[in-house]
Length: 256
Ligand SMILES: NC(=O)c1ccc[n+]([C@@H]2O[C@H](COP(=O)([O-])OP(=O)(O)OC[C@H]3O[C@@H](n4cnc5c(N)ncnc54)[C@H](O)[C@@H]3O)[C@@H](O)[C@H]2O)c1
Image (tube, rainbow, N blue to C red; front, top):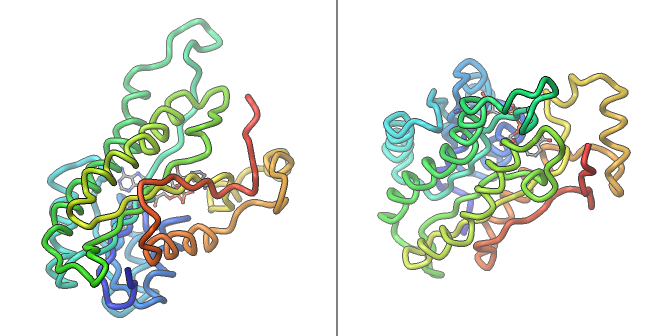
């Protein structure tokens, strides 16, 4: 599907991978809505992009908030054709803590709620608006790109909640693509390895070096623009559907 002239919603667009994606989609001619819990950051990104770009505050896990944000994008852009899910949170904790206490169930639930339920919430609402789009010559009405993590496949010690949430994002990719095939809406997921987003670059140098030592080639963190470029390619390549693509420089995370 073309990027030029179409409406795109990017969750987590106020920072990191989502910000880079919003900027690249806008540079390629999309009209971008930047959804984030952090309105200040989202507004700063929208302002620097300019044009039709706008920021909207919403929690991806809230039905009413996402519905209002999506409808704002549809009204402003005359339709929504692209939805990119980048909002997400990390979490750390073992199944049984060192002191013998069990993993806090509320903390586990919160990670699932944001990373998995939030992603599905945005997809279900965005798709319900995309079905109204006029299909292009190939029958396409829209594209959704979700963000998992290599942690979905090789979750490390302490990543049980994060891995479960991202594993869910991977697992729903194919059934969602199958559900929406009849509507001409594609769904793909990107599973990034280690990317040099703001939080990562704040980590001490020794920690960064240790993480990079596991990445065969290129022997460095991924760049947010490399994630954004793959997102743009997924939007443009109609044969990519129902697939999760690792973007990780051949990284396979060790147990710790
Ligand atoms: N950076 C990496 O190395 C890496 C690796 C694998 C996967 N990922 C995944 O990529 C995605 C983006 O990561 P990033 O490094 O750009 O993170 P980031 O922290 O830089 O950006 C995430 C954005 O999501 C927003 N957000 C968080 N919870 C939200 C919610 N409930 N509703 C709306 N917005 C919310 C935050 O305010 C923030 O602006 C995440 O899902 C993360 O798990 C990142």
